[in-house]
Amino acid sequence: MTSPTGADSSTARDRPHAGTGGRIGRMLGRLAQAALPWRYAIPGALIWAGLMATSATLNLVAAGWQSNDSIRNVALVFGIGGAVGFPLGLTAAALIARGRSSQAGFAAAFVGLVLATIGATSLIYALEYRIYYAQWHANAFTLTWAFQFVFTSLVSTAQFAVSGLPLYFPVGFIGVPVAALWFARQSR
Image 1 (tube, rainbow, N blue to C red):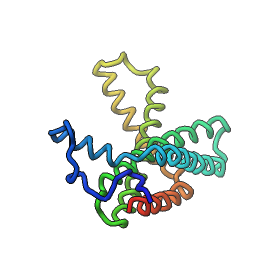
Image 2 (image 1 turned 60 degrees about the horizontal axis):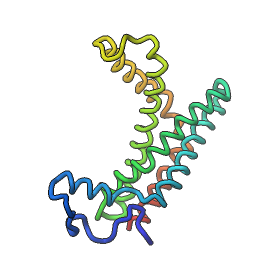
Image 3 (image 1 turned 120 degrees about the horizontal axis):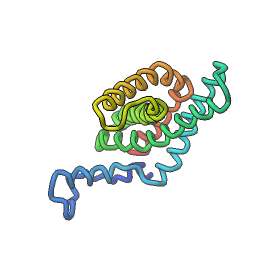
Image 4 (image 1 turned 90 degrees about the vertical axis):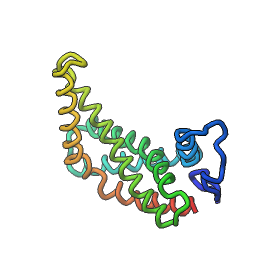
């Protein structure tokens, strides 16, 4: 079976990087080899986005949370975060687990998916938060604006940690080991 990373059995050191004699060229070559092929990245990102949006939606509906429009908006943030996080997390996992056991692949995929999905969703949430509060902030690129930008970003991250992370449980968290197992089996 073809590896989801598109890598063959040889290591990056075995193949010359034509025209890229330096460290940056080698890093870019490894990144290109570890990147998730489109045939896995697109359907996987769509499935992962749907799973993350579903997880958030089910939690918000169960809690009787606000309006349907608000629930749709939160689900959209979680869906986009999942769509961005899936290929990033598995590409990072492929870089870390290259040439290692399937257990290492599982662990790398588990951690990579969790961190990339939460990180992407948190960033989108922070940008939304920043856009909302920007109307009350000072002119751009002033010292006051810089403080407001930093503290607004920190507050949004803390708020996401408290109110956003629970929305991944249990549905989203069940998907992580399933996706990590798939990755570990495919990358053998």
